[in-house]
Length: 527
Ligand code: G4P
Image 1: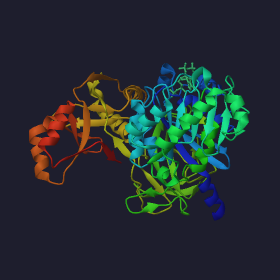
Image 2: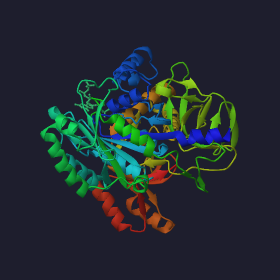
Image 3: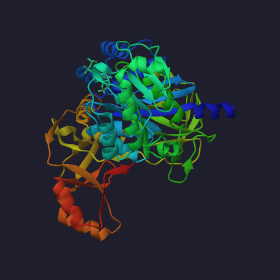
Image 4: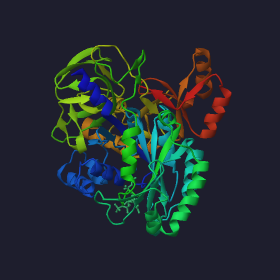
């Protein structure tokens, strides 16, 4: 049995996609599911979303906005591995969940729109990956369009994202004259046929760049390719496993998600190179995925996924060992053992009761108010996983009640919602205001909606002059007192009573930093 568990763990590849909206995350996800045989034909994912909207009303907001607020998990087998793809909310629904999901993966796929290059959301998500040196694979998308010079794209990734690029495939032509890709490691040419994106194509492969067939297939483009390759090989890096695993080098693939081309070349190498479940840090020791005993942490809590049960589901990343239905888990924070027989999985968004799960997998636990982001579960050991941060919010609103008598319910609701990570709450030291912070604007709507539905409180938001928040750290109480005297109007306590600086402007933040060099102003705070 132990052997099987080890084998199962070694097969896991748990990752998320990082990209700017519209770069093609949804499209490539669908193609990955096609390759993983979770769907038979592309186009069905959107169909499923549409029918889900028609039949389910678990969250009115989702229906009203026509978007998904969930972070679902998709699992499929590929080339002898088990792939767990964690979806990260993308557009307006960008939230702290997006960031925190990245703390639950072992690698990431970065999708770039090759006509645009590196865009700002990607930069932010990459910063989060950096916190754990997550290995990154890059897919340059939309080669069927007129794209920017591929060499320039690599330069931009290197300059802006500060990661070395190792091209693994190289495009032959682009836009209307996109002919395919050359595989630098295999010395093969893969020819593209347009209009076959909804299926897995039989690709024509030519072995060897000097093969006469290549000339026949590519004509003048072959010379261009050879010239370009000389330049590329001189200017870029070779793939190196150690550098990749350290997050310092990214293998780069070119293709079109829409045309389902270049995706399989990427996926083949992805499952081969991406790390199996990595060791995880706790406050006391590092936990290896292959340890016999089960452990895991909660990285996300989602409310009301199922209208039949008005419950919350906590998403738990299994970090070591395995889960079997009915096992006893130790809830470290509450110092309590509980038998878990109704964990769920989220295969392709469908909730099913789970029999078994291994390190690397994500399982869902029913939360009746006793689970928080960052909670650790073990088989008895007092461990606490670290590295599940709060991120300094960038958007702020003051909350006002429509009915002032509901203040208690409002406080309770906001504290619970902040424990779940739906928003962050700040209480200024010098006033009775309640200020909400978020990284995505939709978080405010979700909070207002849930306060009304779950706590029967209606609230209104008002603009507030806060540009950014920083958690304050300083061992010297005298200096903190001085800060309180000088800048008390900008200080607040967060949901966990941590001292926070709410800066009205970035200029103000920088000035305060200069005036108080002994004080640290943190952009992230650990749960
Ligand atoms: P996102 O999840 O990252 O936001 O991006 P999504 O996959 O929704 O793709 C954004 C748009 O880019 C979509 O077009 C999609 O069809 C298109 N797209 C994705 N990959 C490729 C590609 O390889 N080539 C080309 N030419 N287009 C691509 P849309 O018009 O916004 O939506 P739709 O009506 O086509 O669904």
